[in-house]
Image (cartoon, rainbow, N blue to C red; front, side, top):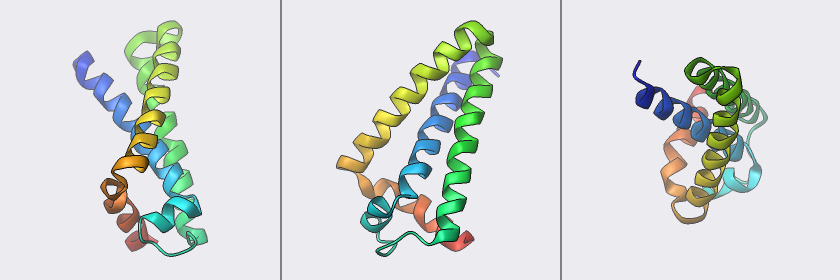
Length: 107
């Protein structure tokens, strides 16, 4: 896999991981039209997916650049991913509705 595609996959995993963790919170679940409280099962699924995706981002970073620079890359990318989720929740919360609906159908 070319390095640019691997970097994009690392960012996507970090962004989607933090998005899943954010959606599992009642406040964001409510804003996405999922009801007042995130159902317990959906909450657990979202948190599991979120942490798994952050781990995938770490693994991809280590594969791409090794332990020394890969860990620095991961720390940078998860920071950018978290800030991107904050921006999405602030200005374009409806972009995350498909993710919430998918979890509702699975759960």
